[in-house]
Image (cartoon, rainbow, N blue to C red):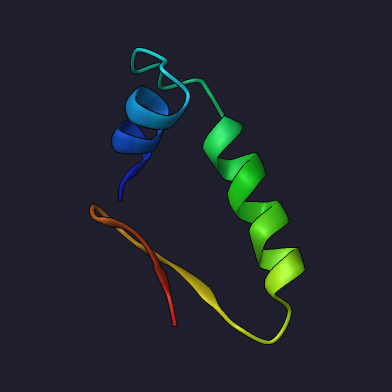
Length: 49
């Protein structure tokens, strides 16, 4: 799932390149997941590994 998908399908936003809502939530997930890693795959989205 990429940023565009998350913005439009989860938050219902039209694409706004200035929006950082996805970054904020990904950061919170990374903190909560501690031992597990949430990777950013450039051009594709995110992966839990």
